[in-house]
Amino acid sequence: MSDLRELYQQVILDHNKSPHNFHAIEPCEHEANGYNPLCGDTVHVYMTLEGDTIEDISFQGEGCAISKASASMMTQALKGKTIEAAKSLCDKFQAMVTCGLPAPGKLAVFAGVHEYPMRVKCATLAWHTMKAAIDGKKNPATTE
Ligand code: ZN
Image 1: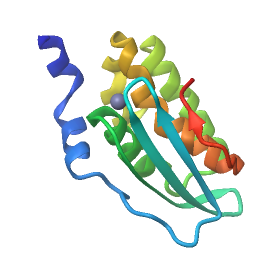
Image 2 (image 1 turned 30 degrees about the horizontal axis):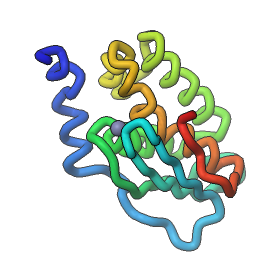
Image 3 (image 1 turned 180 degrees about the horizontal axis):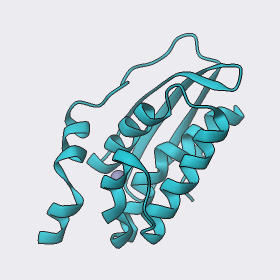
Image 4 (image 1 turned 135 degrees about the horizontal axis):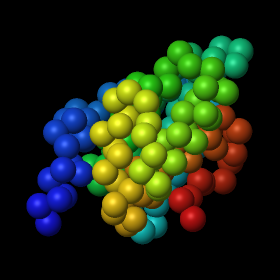
C-alpha cells in the first residue's frame, strides 16, 4: 500500500481539500453530468464559450480525491483555452493515465494513476464530462 502514497501526491490531496472553480455557473449554455459507477464519483461541469474559446469553466460534484482533484486541475488548465486545445489536452491526459505517457505541466501528477486501473476512470471522469458539455449532450456522460 505504500505506493498509494506516491499516487496520492500532496498536490492531489490539496486540490481535493480546496478544489478550484468549485461552483455552479448560472445561466450556463454548456453543461453536462458525469458518473463513474465503478467508484461512485459524480461531477457536473459548467462551461461558457466565447466563440471557440472556453471563457469560464467550473464544476460541482462528489467523489474520491482523484476524481475531485482531476476536475479541479482540469478547470484550471482549460480556462481560456480553445475547444480544439481542450480536446487535445484531454487526449493527452487520457494517454497518460491509461498508458503512462507523459502529459504537460501540472497534470503530470496524475501519471501514477496508470498503475492503478481501478482509478483511471476516476481521473478521466471530469474530462469525459467536459467533452460532453462542449457537445451539449443532454444524457449523462459515463466512463463506460
Ligand atoms: Zn473515484
